[in-house]
Amino acid sequence: MTATRFSARLAERTRASHSDSEGAAFMRDLMQGRGTKSDYAALSAQHWFIYDALEAGATGLAADAEAAPFLHPELTRLPALERDLEHLFGSQWRRAITPLPTTEAYAQRIREVSGWPAGFIAHHYTRYLGDLSGGQFIARLMSRHFGFERRGVEFYAFDDIDDLDAFKNTYRRALDDAPWNDVERERMIDETLIAYRFNSDLFVDLLRQKQAAA
Ligand code: HEM
Image (cartoon, rainbow, N blue to C red; front, side, top):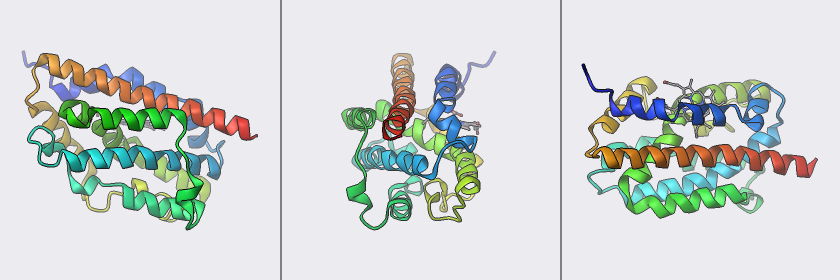
């Protein structure tokens, strides 16, 4: 009998949380064409604060032997995201965006775990593997609904990765090969569940913001 690979166990243990995030009303509306371009812009704005924390954390852990196998420069999203934000909000985009409460707590949590490789990778995995997976559907649908050519959805375009599936498999192998014992693997799974929770809560905040503005 072969033991279940850790990457498969992680995906299995977080599947219900993934469904919660994916199925959040704000996201479902956007995907099904009931959202507006400004809803999409509001989500992109929140991404900026999250990726600012994630990519600072990745820089800080670049020389860490446990984290390094996951930290590929071709994942870096901030420059593409900033071009999207300029397209969506104009050149003064930085002044137009503020973090929602969940985003602040989410970014704060990422900063807190930036000295704990497995904990940081939990957040890294949740966002980047999601962007490489469902993110590709999201980009296609947003382009269809809002007429984006490239600008506006560059965040989801991983130009420096030729084969997304091969890349995800390499990433999953790094999860399998990480030097984490059973206790550390459990802690990493728990932190991934926390990351999903932030993403689901963020969709609740976004819906609330939208309703308050209506
Ligand atoms: C409309 C929204 C979403 C759709 C349609 C979607 C769809 C998918 C699909 C089809 C996969 C499987 C891809 C594969 O195995 O190669 C996947 C994987 C994944 N998604 Fe999502 N997703 C969405 C939202 C999210 C959100 C909000 C997050 C969290 C930020 C997320 C995180 C992930 C992760 C981490 C994986 C990789 C699971 C693994 O194989 O280990 N997704 N998604």
